[in-house]
Length: 294
Image (cartoon, rainbow, N blue to C red; front, side, top):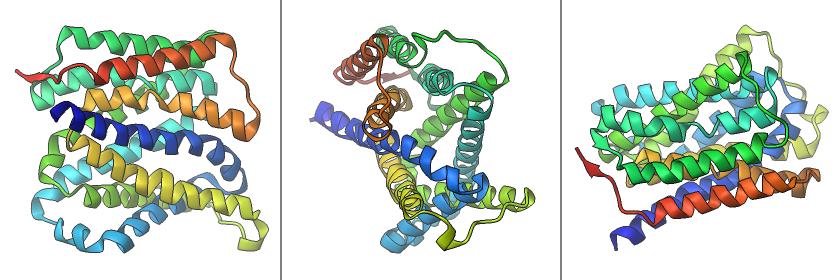
């Protein structure tokens, strides 16, 4: 039963990554019609409002004094990770960024050791190495890899994501996952709204934007933000951050598949091999026994 439960919560992270993987090429289209920070602000505030409207009773009931300090820490880390990660695409290639965004799986075992006092068994580094190798083949195998300012931003973003995962996993035992999801979304939305105003961004007229771009924004706000954070937080309340980060490595696979369907982009042989290796590593990790406390 314990293993079945772990597989179920792991499947929540996998479902989240299907939503995000499909959302990445959709975001590429939608963002071309809006100023960056205001677009992100609307997306995240929409996700937060969606959760509040549906789950306001549980969310308001979970607003305890003990929530705000760790909740704000997680929300701030989340905002920094998303903003840095998105800006990365201005300074590096999507393939290099895609590989580096998988690096939370490298950072989480060390964060678990110091924050949750959980030691990762040596054998669990095997699927981590498998997934990192597969991600490299998927994202960088045919084009090589260089390290510059954009790559440094991507690594920093990945570290912040790892921190979000570990602190969420550590604190969610005593938090309402729906409240944290709404707070994460709202916090990031407000930060981006302030940045948008500071950069003198102006939203275009409603009729001046294609209907498909508005549809993309709604999908990103509800599916890739509100629902996505719910799935993530419910999962992290039951599984450790390293397992969640491993499953998160499936996102480039779904992004590549969605890009093929929506944008007509095709995978080379090495990319296909990388996708298979990633999924194999994730499956291998999910049939292994759980880590034990130090």
